Length: 394
Image 1 (cartoon, rainbow, N blue to C red):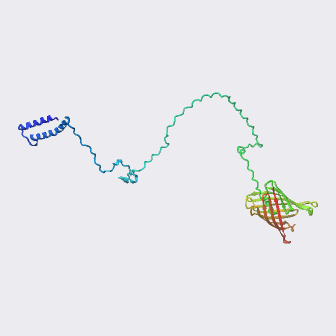
Image 2 (cartoon, rainbow, N blue to C red):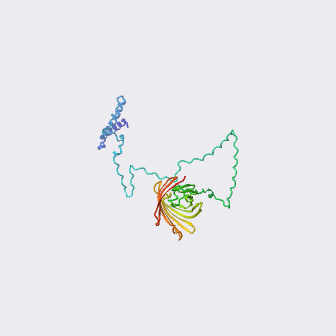
Image 3 (tube, helix red, strand yellow):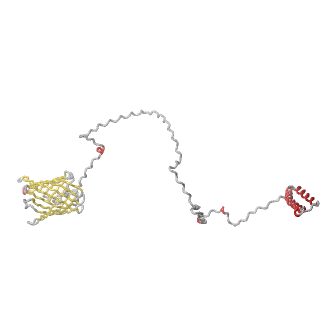
């Protein structure tokens, strides 16, 4: 709306007012003229100011910008401050309880992430299986070598036919592959004089191939040899030059049982006299012995023996009991009791008993017995005889 239009509009209103039309209240001619004039003045002032600026006067400048004063001087904004450590942070508010019974509680702010769902079975492959490999290209023919290829080896000769055993029995696979039974262990070499106590025998025999020599009081000579681990032969000689004869004895002892702590053996002997005047007179003897050991090696033991002498119609039985107690590696104690009893009415005068004991020293090849024999007889004076025995084996 231009200024000229507003001026013509206001003059027209004045002409009609001055023409004699009466003004009625605030809508009459005079108030309308006053309002119109005030509006013209308010609208025309900015236009005058713009006209002055266009005529060459200085333009009007806006007031300078002034920042707003800080609310709390000296405090940086919240977004510029570093986060406080966990121990200085204010406590988090408790989770809001459910608003109806059975409603789930909201997870806290620091709750761990939920566990991933379990993998499906079977799990999918991590990578796609590779495609089938292409067949390898045919290798080129190798160049001919400088040497011709070797000739084929000749076929091995066929084995000879297996001879069948006599009797028509064909061994099976189990019999052919079965290992032979192990040989029984050889008897351990004990003391050189372990086959006797003082005079009475024990059930122990020497190892196979053992040769030994014994001597009693430098008067009685004995030699023996073990054919096997369970059989040995001993020869005893008592020379009597003043009587022009010699007492001889041959004894064969074989082991019947040897297991655990018990041993048993049988003894067969031939005893007699041989001389120029009497010729050869022999008597037979047969007996046995049982030995009970305190250990498997039988270093200490108790023996019970019996012998029957066959002299025609005269039978004489010699029974005995003896013990060996090992005291140390090389020392043992000996004790024995022997009795002689006739069987039947004949030979009533041939009876008696002998008690003996002593100390035994035993080593690998040598053995010594220092003992004494005490004769028990109610019709004569009791006498005690010393006895020293020595045994050697290679």
